[in-house]
Amino acid sequence: MKCSIAWSSLYIQANGKVTPCCGDLKFGDTKEKLADIFNGPAANKLRQQMLENSAALPDICTNCNLLQRLGNDDFPASYRTGTSYEPLSGAYVANELPPQGSKPLSLMVQFGELCNIQCIMCPQDHTSKIGITPEAVERVKEAIPNIASMTLTGGEPTAFKQCWDIIDHFNNNAPRGAHLGLLTNLKSVTKARVEKSFDKIESLAFGINVDAATKETYEYIRHGANWEQLNRNLIDLLNYKNEHRKTGWRLNMTMTVMKSNLYEMRPLIERCGELGIGFGCGGVTGDFAPIKNARTYFEENIFRYPHIGISKSEMIAVFEDALDATECLPKDYQEGARNNIAGMIEITKNTPQVEISPEDVSRIRELPDDQLSRALGTVVQTGRPPWYRPALSDDPMFWVNTGKRTATRITGGIGRRIRRTFSTERL
Image (cartoon, rainbow, N blue to C red; front, side, top):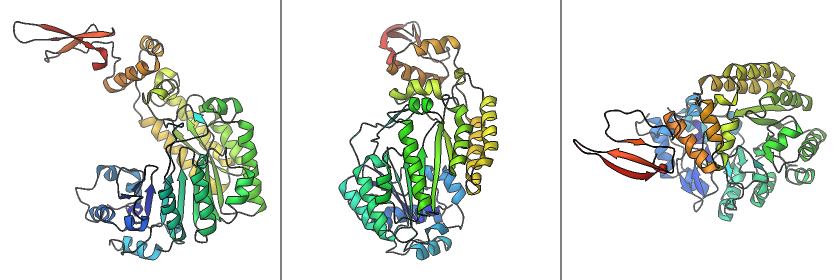
């Protein structure tokens, strides 16, 4: 089992850690040059484990759906613009380690969690000032002349000055035909920025996070965003693309599906069709943590919580209707959108639901956020809220009087019982 990502890519995280992908597999950090990390012992150890199909291969790899799909002799042809394409693709197909001195073909750069809006479902700390270091920026800039692809993410990447520094450097120094991907809410991608920073880039993909087809829903989900500003920047971007014949530019509007926007999926797809762009989606994730999102998950995660009132059959019907709507998209976007939505149907079918009685739903809603989060954690993990006494068993230790500020645990051996009082946080 092998993965072409391990032979081609590096992921530079905001904390300076360098991995091959989003998995927790450290190859090095940005104190070193990226080329040295790419050819280093940690990277080659993972590749050798893959070639040997070793039992020591990390679980995060053996459980990775992407690895399962890529575990063959295909090496991305889209990386041909990178200087190391031939030696790396040749080594991958021949089941060999990369030749020493090879340069990474693909970079993903995560700038930090800072964002210029606050989405209700996002678990990141969007007020955090922690971001990618100047040292890491220089490492990325050193690698740009040899790469074939780079993806920028956050938080909101364009909220960081370092992001624009890297984009400008890519614009002027990347190999001809190199690809840039940008995951953005588009708030900072103004007409002036597009004209200045993207004019030389031939292959560019914007994943534009929108989450809604109407102003009311958009501004409810995406606090601090402005519907008119979004559409103004989007139209300016499309006009620039068309006026300058940027045929290699691709735009997708995306949504995180939840209760508040489920029925706006088809209208958003139709809007994408009108604009001549693509569509993508994913399901809201999260059960009970972090605390700031717990209430949102409880009221919006239709995949996990049936008390919200939207059944699996109802969700599937919406997704099937959305599948039909993809006919309005440009032909080269249709297959991707259909595969995406078909995947959502499978997620809906296969996601286990957390059943909570109406009485307990009401009681959970009355809790402050921190207690609500803990209560949901107990429900998800045990099937019942913390105020229910567990069923008795052969274990002589059990809780009584739960639901109060304290709980009494009864312990004892033959002929005696001892009562001790503990905080309910122990539950």
